Length: 423
Image (cartoon, rainbow, N blue to C red; front, side):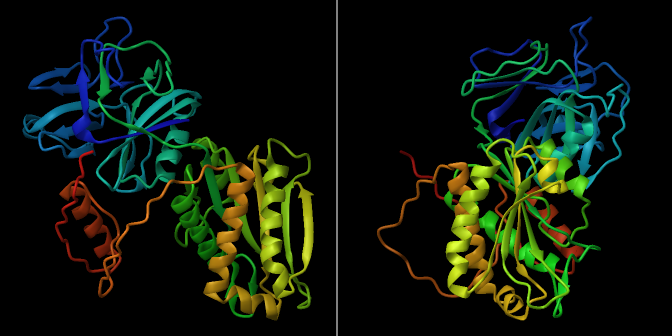
């Protein structure tokens, strides 16, 4: 999978095949191979093209740089837009998956080149390209990246060309999107599978549920990796959601995961059972054995002083290590053991365990460390501030504020200025 984040102000559209000097050129809305004209609704600088009945979603980029992905629009919206490009199907609306339907014959369950655009909470646009996937795969991928809205731009003959990787696919269409600046999603793509959740509590012991420990552990692992290493780090759930095993591995497949790490907690009907164990598939594939060994060594070095038993490096036909080609699974102590349970109830211990696990994973995968700079002078601050995110455009902030209100959380919208240092 290819992925790019682009600020709307750096994006333009052309109906003349585009200029080959652009750093990034992408397929725009579907186009007719026979007539060489765009299919669907499109507007550029006041010129409007409409070559198919209404019913397709659109990407609208406004004159002030704001963006919107919607099925609800009118000509007044178009008049205030810098450009409008239609897609072939709506995938996500207000963070909820849509029923994939379209006036075009998009063949949603057929594997073929697919491209889509999603609206990130930061105001940026996320473009995802699947070289061989279904519409559902693209939908899953956007859901994984927690986009607000998303639509499929095209469903065949995708064209992608960037000046970083020199990638070219398909045949350049008559209508293209051009980006002056962009960021490629960093690789490798690591998926942290947070076991159980929602209606599935997992193991239960001494009043504690496995799903809660897994969530705390997995989110802390992701935070450590994002803070310290280069890569794209995703979690299968960030709340108390219910997900089947197939949904988890389908999500990992959709985003083209390079490695899947599944976090669990053990249990047994004999309270004395305790310890840590790690799993890979019966027949190791990729570098799963190497990564597993690095994680196991790092974790046991941390756990040994606590008197935790090393239950070994195991192989088995478990779904989470069988379906992803490159993967491993861990069982972090026993929730049914009083001593282990006490440690799992200690937030400080769980955070440390998450850090050493993430460090072992990074070591096994040979992840590049981030270059960080420490300010020469630290300015003391007073009080505490809680921020859910930074939004380039007010619409994104208002949408998030409305979502939080539905959860009973009241927020205050505060303008924020970011200082830009010119080099």
